[in-house]
Length: 219
Length: 215
Image (cartoon, rainbow over the protein chains, first blue to last red):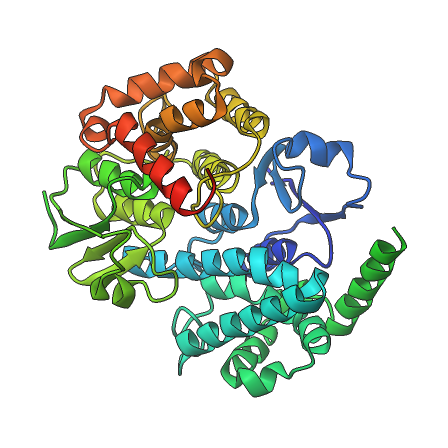
């Protein structure tokens, strides 16, 4: 029986990007449906009644919500010969830790650095740079966060790259100067087809950001 | 049934630490716990083991540190196989992980501080959790067995009494099924050994709130 795989998504979403990358890494054919977040579809509201957010993976009619839950589900359902999570429990815990760290930081510093102004924004900007520096330290001389192989932590973290230009421009700093290893890692990841296809162009994201800012100011 | 040396950097009142202790108890793993002094300053071992978040719980397995309670419980489940805490099928596991995430996002702030929001929001959230439980005895686990989500959720039990006193409501009045589930969980030895006296939790939170200038 052919699998029916639908991804309810929104193209600028870092969380949506994770799901796209994971599906493509596993060679899964899927139907990506763009949601208008100001006018959510009945399908989205039905499939994610608790949070009403994207991404939602719908596999043969059954919904999976929350991007990291989705990535793990994809990893466990398809392509067992190319796992995203390592097999060793300690390494798995480490991979999950870094994905969780990004979620915690994006929830606080990330959001504030983008949408606040003045002193609060300055504080958030510093926190965001600190966050990238922690990633820089963790990466060290490794090719990927998991070591030699592209994996779960990389899938979870690489969507940051799509938003780098926005953060740099807003904050008036250069990420490659602050964190050269992170940028080198990002370029390495972008050479993978799954990533290149799933991450929008940085300038498109910037235009999107400006459009949202304009709308917010008008309100 | 220990596989190596297991140490938990702990705090008696933390629901996040309770998760780890319950999971270890469920698996029959012997461990040492070292109580962190909340007001005396964090130990060197804690700061070295969890330099990023500097928080408890931290599990040290043969000296290797793990942090973030939900991740630690997953690690415990994968390292000591029996009894399994997660369902065996991918979809069941996804549902369990979803509800564990819900509990962290909605019931606790992501940084674990006491939720200073309206009682009404809190009760609404508990109702959503109660709906997820449905008619089952536990969130599961395989089938209707005590499992991952129950472990992630049950630490709430010791804090409810305090919330009820602060908010002037009773969980049982709004969420009888959830209340019954909590009572059921407390009958398990793995849970009973770990949950602190609710009155002691209330006194602690009272003091904590005063220190923070909230009362």
